Length: 437
Ligand SMILES: *Cc1c(COP(=O)(O)O)cnc(C)c1O
Ligand SMILES: [Zn+2]
Image 1: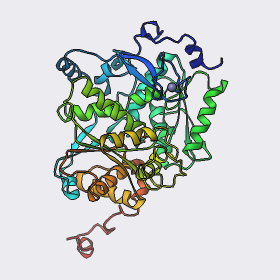
Image 2 (image 1 turned 90 degrees about the vertical axis):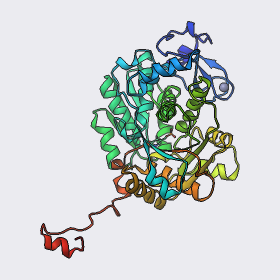
Image 3 (image 1 turned 60 degrees about the vertical axis):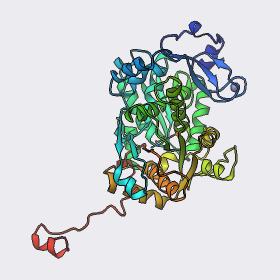
Image 4 (image 1 turned 90 degrees about the horizontal axis):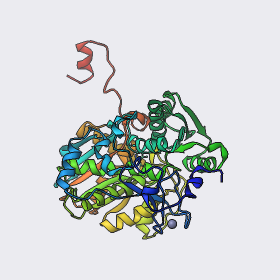
């Protein structure tokens, strides 16, 4: 057996007290298969040995007084580590060298609500405020701690852009070697951000799905020994980082759940783990048990999940992406079927918008709320508008829409329209002549 994960598998036991990592993962008890429920010890593996289903982290969550847990969380750091009791991390994680992401702003978006005809209250969860300006810092922070525990020395990923920068930065800060893989045709800002932290950056001649396939091969090869691919062999841990979006939204609303959430879909991991986080909050008694609807958002040029939702299918047929929303351009989304389940179970939907609608939505959000979103934020805001207009989302409900990235990374999307109003000589006469007085 040449793979580290498989070697650990040999000591399989369902009892966490037998795990060599018992305390390093806090309340996490095991990995469990989403398909067949088989449990495996916490280790750098991602697929079930019985059925090849995806593995996720299973917990012994704290029981007892929800009020005490709320107080403990509220007294914690202004980062995702305030939720350490609910994450697969050691209790002292806040003292470790990482980027301390999260606790981003939940912006009350009254102007945007008015434009869209939303009367029940609208908030933008603005994750552009993270250390590398996208939501990816959340997921990388958890995967990084797992890599540390497993003694992996190279941090890696297959990326649509934002993840490469997040891994590069986290590795630099934590003292890991990094080697990240991206499609060759990414936005310049994402390439620069992936490279600037000093790790290795490999551009692959192909799209994201080719990059991902290549990385899976690399993990299976002796070359990949000691490598932690945050979104492949560390994927079960990586995914848990997205739960913190659910926790923060609920806490920032005053420990309440919204009625509607509009979430972007790339692989679908974020959406499924936000749902997992909301379910945990209910189970723990941290919020009142009430229904909520989850809406998924895609770009029309990469809308395999939306297409399956509309057709009533349970399986997602892969597509070849062609959209300006490159951060969401995954043609074969691993968690697509689970996204369909969640949208249907909660009474939500999956919708998509064209590139032109994405650009419109970016400028709408900027103009109404002073938030400059990347194309993924254009997708969610554009989809929100479409859902209201088509009657799929009740405007009288309280709604949270996610902005997961920073507009400075996707300037090309708006550079044709976001131009100087006039270019003039520095005189009052010229100002008047330009019709601006
Ligand atoms: C990665 C990413 C997402 C969501 O990705 P999933 O694979 O669905 O978890 C959303 N927005 C941005 C900007 C991203 O980079
Ligand atoms: Zn299984």
